[in-house]
Image 1 (cartoon, rainbow, N blue to C red):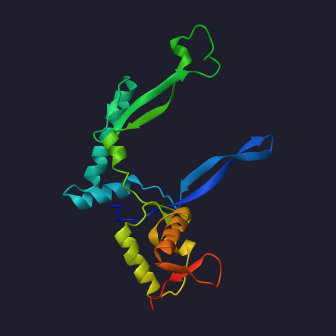
Image 2: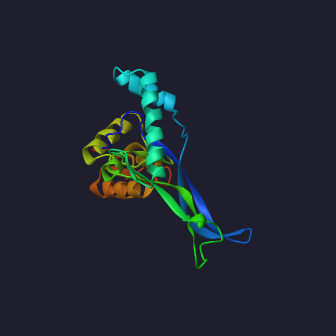
Length: 207
């Protein structure tokens, strides 16, 4: 199970991206996933949080940050990479100016800063692997077998019927996984088809 507790599952929204021919969509190219409701956390709020966790005041935190900004900028201007502790490393990304990339002779005047690249540390990236994401009502970490049985028992204590979607939502899995698990439960005799509609199931009542 995920160790994430503070905000629960991060809600995501999917978008189909299409190949285009002129102004017309031709075929699905892929799926883009965006985080829903993402908000920017301001520096003042971060400073306040840090101040609450130790004896430093908000002003102390902001003063240190401003000094760090200055020193980081100066190090980058000197052509150095800047290691940010366990976060990762910053470096300048440089290249030839537009129209100069194919020129035979490129001088120093033809080079410009294209951006600043942040390379996250491996441990920093790994720290996010336990996050849980929700997309279309389904979270990314299915329940364990024992927890699934508990969840189903709780569900059928107040519900007579269950659909594939109900199972997927309850057990935090995809609809394809839900169908497979329901098929297994049908074979094991734990569930039976309801008879009222296709794809609706109920617990098998032992005589």
